[in-house]
Amino acid sequence: MKKTIKSLVKEGLVKSSPGKLGGFSLAIPLDEIDFYKVFMAIEGREKVFASQHLLVQFLNKDKPKLEPCAVSSAMDNIENTLKTTMNSITLNKMMKQIQENYDIDDLDEWIKTVAK
Image (tube, one colour):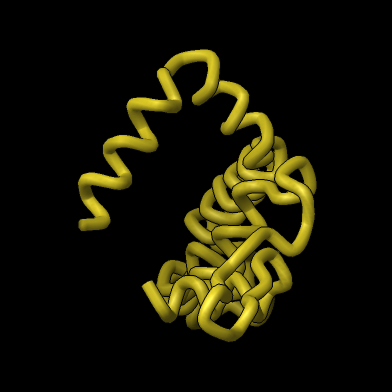
């Protein structure tokens, strides 16, 4: 948990307040935080799918001009789709959906129970 919070603070999504009454709070509004920002803060900025280009190395080893790797191209397409989808979902949208679908008081009670 400490590592995750530290990553969110480092990325500027959360701020920490030291001291006896300190804690953590959002550094920017919920509608400016999307799932991709959270994902990148926690997982890092590398690509989700890191291709080794094995097909290109194996199939094109005797050819002077390397053809694009079909698997790498597909994975790049998937990654771009994932990024676009995650960018489109803000925490504010998620919070509104949660408030519409669930009784927040029940959630608060559950958190208090688990936190004991």
